[in-house]
Length: 224
Image 1 (cartoon, helix red, strand yellow):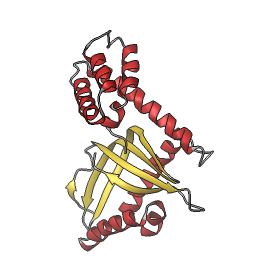
Image 2: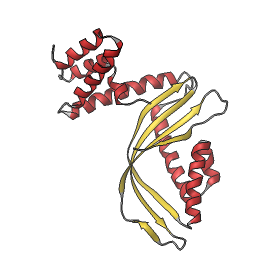
Image 3: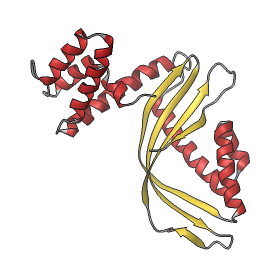
Image 4: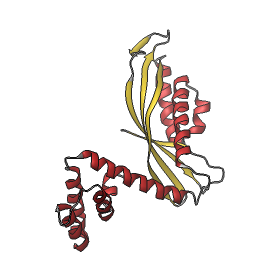
């Protein structure tokens, strides 16, 4: 999966983008780092790249760094989206993002209702077994976990990974949620139905285009 180091590893592109913001001037510390990376052997390059990343993260103006990162992310997603359309001509990043929000809400709803029948078609077998275990725990305690998504504050497609015909898409959601637990009599025993919390969830959706009739499934959850 793409991470911060992967973004910044392409130093020359970063220099070009950052120069648009007037950050880099001829022969300053950053340009010297780039020249050193280009001339170094492979082992030295790795260390120099790490130093370059560190110097960027230590910049005082974090706003500029964030803008650069957002631009790089956008370019990465556009490139991967173009690759994905070779497998699926109907793929559209924004449409996928919008649909994923609905699936996210459905999964939460089916978990709450302990509706295994409708939950199963939306997730991989591994995720289903994990969710089924959680449902059984609440059933044994005669409890119900209520999770209400009040609104999506943000939803960002952060990575598209393509290996042969197996595609994984990572989405980061920031939502306002109300979560609490009820006992068998309907009494709230944990949480508060009047309290909203801002929650970040990272979900991975997968589809194997080598399999006829395959569809997108929730395949992984990542701790934010």
